[in-house]
Length: 185
Image (cartoon, helix red, strand yellow):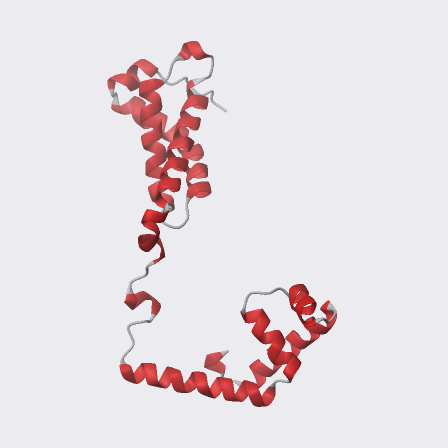
């Protein structure tokens, strides 16, 4: 395997294109790992990659070999710090509306009044069907499950053991598959 040549800090600081391309190519695996770690609401992976490259450019300007770290180590830390700072900023509360909003066309909320009426009718049909088909325990288990409780928490809240709650949830699933229209399950 050929040995990697050290990056020329002098050429990098002068903006030599070949040296810049070599530095970016060498640091890209670390930048991509950092991007995968930092990506989330408000920060796409490609945005995080760009922030890492900006951190690399900053490292080129601020690196001091007298401090004892290799350039690659220093540049990797600078790139990751830039990505973390950008992700933190993107996730701040002031960006909440941008991070949480979705265009109406993408999430199906741009429905006509007719579609809304049909959806409301389907919902009422499901509620009626569940009231007839599920036992009291099964309705309670389903309500707690839909509220975000785990099977263990459901059992605790209902004063039942976990296995009873688990069995009730299994019956609910089977009944939903059997009695509800396929496009609603």
